Amino acid sequence: MPLLQALYLVIIIAITQSYVHSAKAKAFDFPAISGKENNVITIYSVTDVDIFQGTIADFQELFPDISIVYHDLQSLELYERIQDETLNSDVTADIAISSAMDLQMKLANDGFAQRVEISTAQDMPSWSQWRNEVFGFTSEPAVTIYNKEYFKDQPLPKTRLEMQRFLAERPSDLFGRIATYDIERSGVGFLFMGVDSERYKGIWNLIKTFGANGVKLSTSSTAIINNVNSGKYVIGYNVLGSYALARLDSSPNLGILYPEDYTTVLSRLAIIPKAAKSKEAGKLFLEYLLSERGQQLLTTSAKLNAVHPGIKSSGPEEILAAQARSNLQPIKVGPGLLVYLDQVKRRKTINQWNKSLRGE
Image 1 (tube, rainbow, N blue to C red):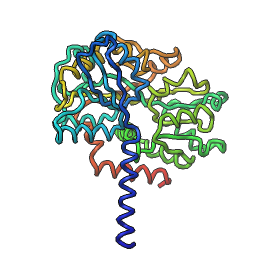
Image 2 (cartoon, rainbow, N blue to C red):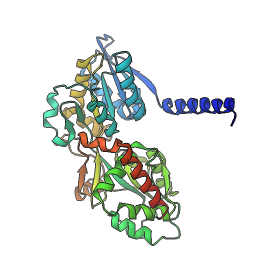
Image 3 (cartoon, one colour):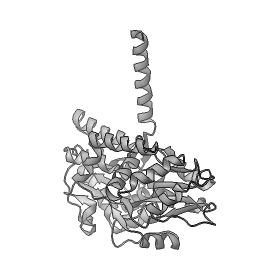
Image 4 (tube, rainbow, N blue to C red):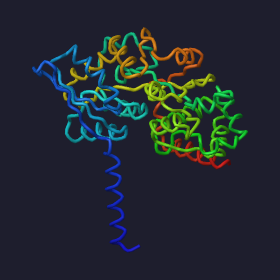
């Protein structure tokens, strides 16, 4: 390839990657409702703003003089932005919120978060926080979603072994109609698969049956949920349950299964960056997120199950009963999360994933 042509290709790739990287980045202003703005809280978050609006509105009811600027980012973008702004301008967000537990933990482990005393954190379970630097504030299961119409006349596999046996029969109408995250492109998908590889010895046999049935891979929870509800797909594995729960009312054919052998539970993590413009502003919002009032709002308004032991989950009775039957296993917040960022382990997991999909 001629040098000029090669250079042109590199530039195009760089531009494309830059566009993809910033495609979601948006900032939303929530002015002080009193009209007497005394302070501004800057939030970096990977949670869609429409999910978080009710929480912000309730916070501003308590603190009407505070404005909020909410930056809706991708998880890797949030991670890199905190680092870049800390090192180059010494000022960044007042609080950073992400479901990419491993990346949040790495920011803290590398010195980009600061310790804060949060009074409302005292009631939280020990697995949900680390050294007063990283705080989990949601409890979100990795569920199997299914099309109710498809399974109305046949038993639904309720454990991973049952699903493996069901898929091994390879029903003729099932090919190309199961879906899961593409672990090479989805951070949450890779995290869930990494946990599966530790907790379930037969995971790669299950993935082989996925491959044999023409599994569809996606980076989007919404796409998987839409396609399962429509009947294009009939099973979605390891889908983030909070998004599925939020869609139940508008998706009549969507069913949610909490695997009864175990259900992995993810938590969105909040940190106060070391270079926060206002540590106290970030701390105030975090105090609210971990308070009983804030946790209740997350459950009822955002459909994000609370971590606080005093807040009950909301939802249809059959969903609550399924949660009670399942063996819920939270991902512990701590340095153990960093193993999922180890490049050797990542390559090994992805290689095994691809081999299993090919039936090897």
